[in-house]
Image (tube, rainbow, N blue to C red; front, side, top):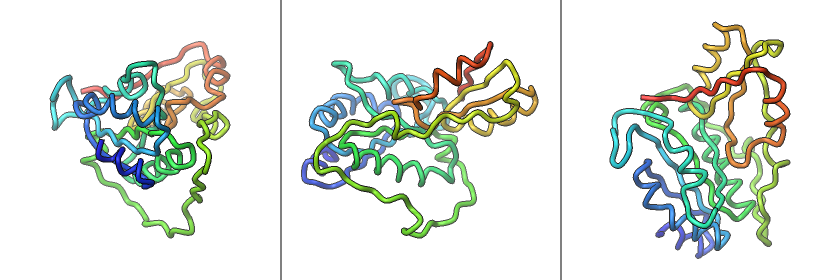
Length: 210
């Protein structure tokens, strides 16, 4: 709610939490949606319900991030896939929030939070420009990059996953000789998602579990 106050005052507001905190923030996120305020909520997922297992990691907050508010209240949900690209997707979350005047939930997890990776600090000129809207606009499907299929595209099996499963997907697809599709944009989904999925006889959904 403090972050929402900053957004009401005209600033880009951001707050971070884990799954239990996201439960408590649900009503406030609904207010930010209704008031069309730019807000970034970072959820570092961990294992288990309630206060859970702080030292274990799971991708267990997906449904809560997408649907966990009353009144069928939508929120944009994106996910970082490595420790190194957490910066890129935090910037992307801020860009979406400011340009579309809406809350954005950025999903990471304990696996990423405790991980490391080589990362070059970008120049400000290299970052995509943020163009805030004077009049609120809703996020449209054509603003989301298309879903890309990698691996053996001729296979009849497609592995799909999101967030920090990216490395696991590539390893499994290489071993099994099948195709893979990795999601960073979760809500809304890329507009070609249905078209891609219909091309395969078998869809295997992979997620990180404790």
